[in-house]
Image (cartoon, rainbow, N blue to C red):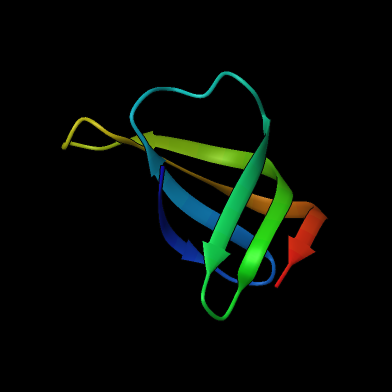
Length: 67
């Protein structure tokens, strides 16, 4: 998975194959972010010309976070 964009409301990411569920658990890690897991309600998915899928949705709840 490659994150394209995220903010406090939602996330947009690329993935190699279709996702069959409407809710996913996303794990993010970054220097300023620390480690975070969040439940995401997916609202859209697009197939790109590069053979990848791009999906996005809103964060439902924060599952865990550590520094």
